[in-house]
Image (cartoon, rainbow, N blue to C red; front, top):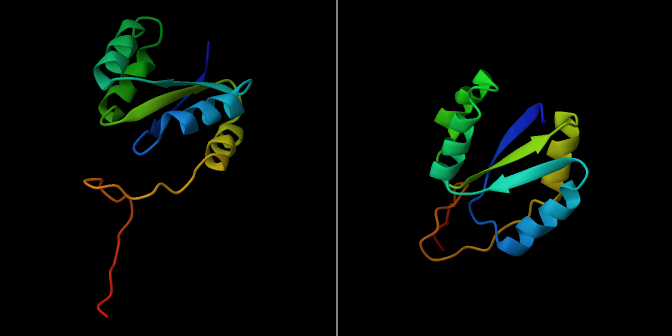
Length: 104
């Protein structure tokens, strides 16, 4: 049904933000977040309908989501980036960018 699939990272995304993303994508795309084993099993189940889906399996690692769309990739990417916000640091979290603390 959807000719385009995006793989998006889901680290440090809270449920309220995910809900806002889903609302902004309404009419453009569908977002699916879930356990990696469940996503892999679903993709393997659809392998007979679309063998190219198997190429996604090596990329499904960690906390990810799948965005399905019929729209142009640029439109969906822009909608996703509109909802990107900086996440506060938490104990035990791995920073997505380098953090340099200068000596005083």
